[in-house]
Length: 324
Image (cartoon, rainbow, N blue to C red):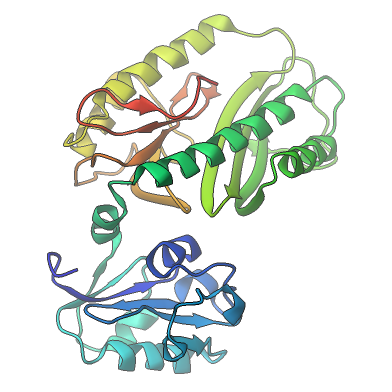
């Protein structure tokens, strides 16, 4: 925080608050993600957590660091402003919150992403293994859903297969659950898969306190090895650019030169949730890749989108999972 000239960090995203404060199963009420509910002050012995569920707070956290989440939005913002009022430097926030800017008056509010990127990497070997387990669980669930594809199957049945597979890997989903799309449109429960449909499956789950994500695209009918080969070649080109110290802009440039499109993010970090860096093909992005970062690549090549997770290193990256 000192290196970034930040005196306090306000976190509204649940998994980022979990990373910074160790909280679990803390529920957000009221305005949700626009309302910071964990505050980290430089030099303080503990973060301050605003919660409706104290059961999610770590046992070692001082009682005075746990406050009720106020139902009155203005009262909550006033309390945050008072809490950070005695700190020096800017206030960093992980979401754009005009109401917070107003509550802080002339105090500068900056993007917390650069600071969070630095704090999250490098991962310890134990963290990387925990993330790898979650990624493998997500991949298992994706394969279960893809394996249920056949002409005539309804969206409701695919979602039921997801729920069964989730139970089998003993995971939950504070992440996004499952999204099944046909031609980019989510498949409704009553929609029926037809022969020749190209179905995209995205799974996000939570296992052992860490997030796992996986995505794949499958044909309901004859497979297309040539299309999959093209995707693999592009993935390898992108992975070759993912070395520690590489500007994120260079990764984007590699993707553009390879003719990659995107659906969602081109790449993102992974830890206790989806984390920085958030790499968008269509937006200029400063910063470099850091050694120890777990990065999920998800290029769209032709009409095939799939993901694969790796660990950024000084040399060639280390894959966390087999090819989809």
